[in-house]
Structures are given as structure tokens and as C-alpha cells.
Length: 84
Image 1 (tube, rainbow, N blue to C red):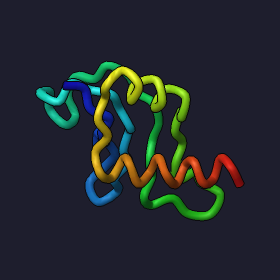
Image 2 (image 1 turned 90 degrees about the horizontal axis):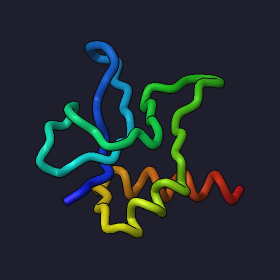
Image 3 (image 1 turned 135 degrees about the horizontal axis):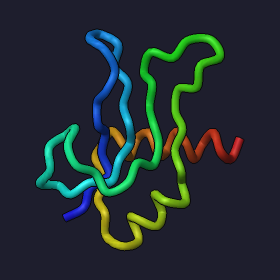
């Protein structure tokens, strides 16, 4: 099964997440199929908090990929900001 999920990077106490498409059996930060965006929970000022390629999300969900709960929330946020 293929999942769209977060992969953590960044320093200690300074998280930064890549939104990736990966096999569900692979490790959280391990092998990925494709990187489709990022999420920076500590973004301040003019820093970009979320970037997501919604076309690729639609493609991967169309071929059967499952989104994690957190990624579902982030996708909904990205769609709101895209229509605004």
C-alpha cells in the first residue's frame, strides 16, 4: 500500500517536514517514491508554512494512495489557500 505522509527533517527542536509518497512498509524517514511538498510548523513572518503540489496529490489518490490524518488536514488547508 502506498501512503502520503510526513517525513521529518530539521534540527533538534526545529522540526521541518517533507510531504512524501512512500510505501507503507518503509521507515518514516526512509525510502520514498516522490516528494510532493513541505510543511514548516515553526514558520514566522514571511516564511512559507506549507507548499503542496495538489495535482500530484490528486494523481496519487487516484491510483490508490492513502493520506494520513495530518496530511489530510494539510491538503484541506492548501486547497483553502489555493481558492482564496
